[in-house]
Image (cartoon, rainbow, N blue to C red):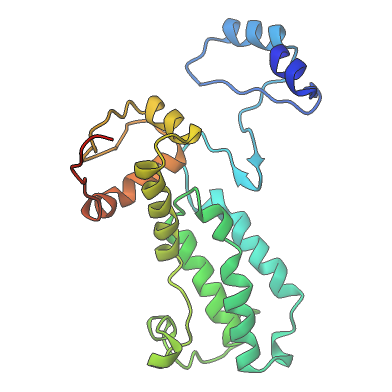
Length: 229
């Protein structure tokens, strides 16, 4: 760390720095490491980095409840009753559906979380999200159809989530010299052969997401035998 600071000109803020340990790390070892680095305190949860939670434990719907809260915060600023149906649809597709996109690029959201967000979007469109009674003129399945097919063009949020992770999987196969690719392959003991399964008993949320889409990635991947250059 001292070498990095000397070379880069940056300094580490001890006040802003937190340290977390595995639950299997003995207390004396934790105390020694914390004292050595001079960090003020140990935390159980490292919080978020660039809005994405740094998760080291079991994930549930509650883990990503903040995405729903962000949607609700947006809705508070919109008077849906004064908007036309077309206006509500436009806001829902352009703003509400885009809120989870950043997190979806590196984490597989629980299906329940996606369904809760979809329900919130649909209620907003039909003007029933504030506890008032109302009728949903079409089902969510119909609303997800393209506009030219009679739908409203909404997304099934679970599908773009999988698409984002498949994109990372594609880069993992093709961008072999990238640092992040080499780090992941070294961490999860990936050799030169395309593995049939990448499932691990203990892994990051990114790797868990890749595991869920790996079958589709393998079905779409092939090797081209060439002259070796």
